[in-house]
Amino acid sequence: MELGWLLWGTAVLLLLHVLMELSPSVNFALRIGFYCLLCVVSSALAAVACLLVNGGRTVKNMRIIRATVRTFKYFFGLKFEVKGLENFKVEGPAIIVSNHQSILDMMGLMELLPDDCVQVGKKELMYMGSVGLIMYLGGVIFINRKSTSSAKMVMSEVAKTMVAENVKVWVYPEGTRNCTGDLLPFKKGAFHIAVQAQVPVIPVVYSSFTSFYNPKTKLFTSGKIKVEVLPPIETKGLTSDDVTDLTDRCFSTMRETLFRLSGRPSEARDSS
Ligand SMILES: CCCCCCCCCCCCCC(=O)SCCNC(=O)CCNC(=O)[C@H](O)C(C)(C)COP(=O)(O)OP(=O)(O)OC[C@H]1O[C@@H](n2cnc3c(N)ncnc32)[C@H](O)[C@@H]1OP(=O)(O)O
Ligand SMILES: CCCCCCCC/C=C\CCCCCCCC(=O)OC[C@@H](O)COP(=O)(O)O
Image 1 (tube, rainbow, N blue to C red):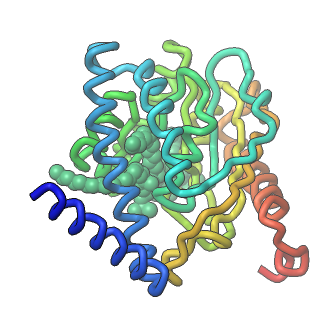
Image 2: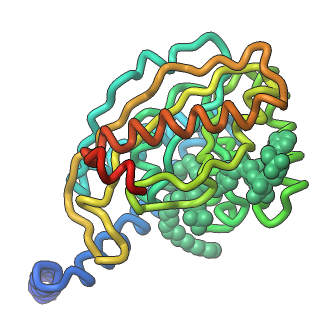
């Protein structure tokens, strides 16, 4: 009986392996499916650990989540080459902004995440079962993207609490995933918070995933991701009138860095 199961198991694994080799679509679906399964199962396990160790919703749980998610890269053959980590060492709170390419970004996020740092996420993520639960327990700030006024209210509250509680806040200023190898125009919420709280903005840039991950062409192989934490941009003395300029400056620096890290030629930069 047990030998029968073993043979069936081996046959199914072999079949999946052959299908993955033959078809990029099957390879992509299985690898993404496995990633989602890993997220769901690890979130459930991490949630139990968070509840046992810290008792409820607190940024301290991010340490447990970070340690869990950092193991994921080994399953997918992903390597991170990180530079500039010393730029996270600012006194007190800060706003961290980074580019957002895919759901795979959670691995890159946790690879770098400093202590006492929460992320801003869309409200819909809260309803993703154990994944929503772990985000809630880690202190993720959920915003309703369908209501500008409510999102702005939550962001303004964040500006106050991040100073009171001495936490850093990680925002994806593009506001959505974008896997084109370029940046979408930045939304200004993160920069408003930074100015309101008078805290620095720390830009983080991940090189383009397009050489190893592309949902359109069903590409998902192993790969190397270069990451750079850029020097903090001070906001002391800036007012709401300076937010547009601050946003534009940060966008230009990050775009330049993205192209450099991704090895994109300068003609391509100028023509886009
Ligand atoms: C194992 C499992 C893993 C577990 C991992 C756990 C980690 C989980 C990580 C989860 C990661 C999940 C990752 C994700 O889920 S990413 C998706 C969610 N994140 C975001 O959307 C963040 C970026 N978005 C913004 O910052 C937007 O601006 C918001 C959402 C705030 C509003 O967007 P909206 O599109 O509605 O409006 P608008 O941007 O056109 O702005 C309208 C006007 O308002 C002005 N304005 C804006 N804000 C403020 C303000 N605070 N005070 C005063 N004014 C403000 C603004 O300048 C503009 O005016 P003007 O300039 O045109 O005159
Ligand atoms: C009871 C319901 C059960 C539902 C189970 C759902 C299973 C979910 C499986 C895998 C989830 C892995 C996702 C990890 C977290 C990803 C966060 C993320 O990257 O969200 C995207 C968001 O930044 C921007 O959203 P859009 O690009 O605007 O869209």
